[in-house]
Amino acid sequence: MQTPHDDETRSVRLARMHKREQLQQAGIDPYPYRFERTAEARILQEKFQDLPAGEEVSDFSCTVAGRVMARRVFGKLAFLDIQDATGRIQLYCEKQRITEAMSPEAFDHLKNLTDIGDILGATGTVKRTEKGELSVYIHRFEILNKTLLPLPDKWHGLTDVEKRYRQRYVDLIVNPEVRQTFERRAKIIRVMRNYLDDRGFLEIDTPVLQPEVGGADAKPFVTHHNALGMDLYLRIATELHLKRLVVGGFEKVYELGRIFRNEGISTRHNPEFTSVEVYQAYADYFDMMDLTENILRACALEVLGSTSFVYQETEIDFGQPFRRVTMRTLIQEECGVDCLSFSDLGEAKRAAQALGVKESDLVKVSSAGGVMNLVFEECCEAKLIQPTFVMDYPVEISPLAKSHRSQPDLVERFELFIYGREHANAFSELNDPVDQRARLEQQISRKAAGDDEAAGIDEDFITALEHGLPPTGGLGIGIDRVVMLLTDAASIRDVIAFPTLRTLGSE
RNA sequence: GGGCACCUAGCUCAGCGGUAGAGCACUCGGCUUUUAACCGAUCGGUCCUGGGUUCGAUCCCCAGGGUGCCCA
Image 1 (cartoon, rainbow, N blue to C red):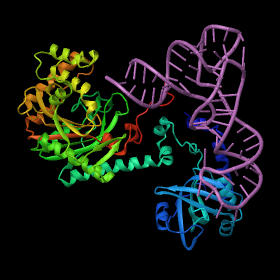
Image 2: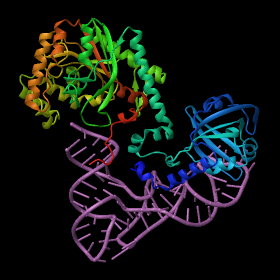
Image 3: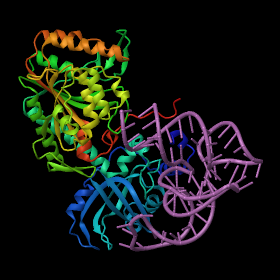
Image 4: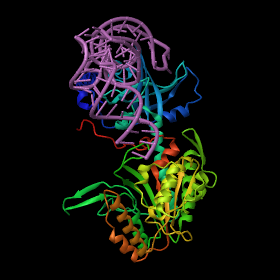
């Protein structure tokens, strides 16, 4: 990986620096301030799609601008392909026309002092060449940016995966599908906001910097506030503050924003990612299932124009009602074992081991519910390709969810699985403050027995609950993973413009 | 954290126990219908780093670094 300093000695950069100087010596500013365009590539392509080869529209003048993506230069003629935000178009550059309109040297400047990657503006008529390429037949051009560094290899493009992420701007210039991914991402987020706004949900920003972490089981990033002399955590969820807002009387709230988890990086995990959490008073987890289903269907329809699509060569269908099945039933179907029937932890662990759960995972777990969850992860998760609401989780791994109305040891919680991955997590929210305190305390003692960061209890959250949280349904959706699905991206890094990467040259 | 793979010119990659190559890019020359333009010439190397084996290592071995994929 080259750093800009290494580039100092690179011949390409030196050559371009020299061209920049030559332009300046000729009285040309290689970095002008403004340029007035009258046309974009795609608009021209559409407008003149029926223009026959060899014909020029001499009474139509237009001005375009964009980055030079290809150059084919002859003695007194040059073809430059420029790319703007809408697409590409060829500039047909004839020495005679340019000389007449500009100056005797102008064509040589174009020929000798511009490179692939430079940003140009140009004015001319429209002509489809003999070979059938729609072109702007230019008589005037302006260099809008003399670039110093070259674009990647014109045959292979930018294939180095790391460089695509580190220098996303280059990736975007060279790989048009990357642009589409981020356009779709923006659209998905817009659809979600519109969907919620239209139904009376209010978006409220809650703190990123928090004195206590909570709302999920994850390791936080720690930072320090100098003036207050205190450590603060970056939020791992927006849950606890949004519930406070429901206590305060906002009956439909949500927050769409960045979450930070100090954990591993993989094709499905980035330390900072985007979630939307939604809370609705007087609703339960069944209402959240309906909401989840509808919002995802709306996204697919809006972005892809269809409720079914192909992800990594697998057909995914959002058109049918999503399957709703309990974790217990799924395990019974896959393994023939009823996880609620074990008499003690030892029996549960022996059964789990027989089903292929690793010893190294089992030792970290100290409850039957934890074992049940491991069995589910081992035996069921990967098989849930079509959208499936997995319902009724063990209480031990769900400290913020309300106990099941009819099943002891379980809570009213679901996760949505698609393509074997979790995409959403929702509860009938636990609003009994006494039960909530007991659950959190249990969680802490369990952690303290196990490992590292035994987080404190967010006392203010308990206080809020003591003031009364109405019956509430809550939902969290991982936006990045939804974007992955709807853009057919294999890695979460493909849907985050600037994914977290190791810094270069440190250590 | 575990497994596998890769690291050679600016880029994409060959290569081989005997001191390194191609295409493209860059630079120079030629060219008025190209689409990876073409033709000719030049330039271009810490073969990831360190150690070992060897007369000799880019190649084999060990360690480290980086990257990717899979698993946790």
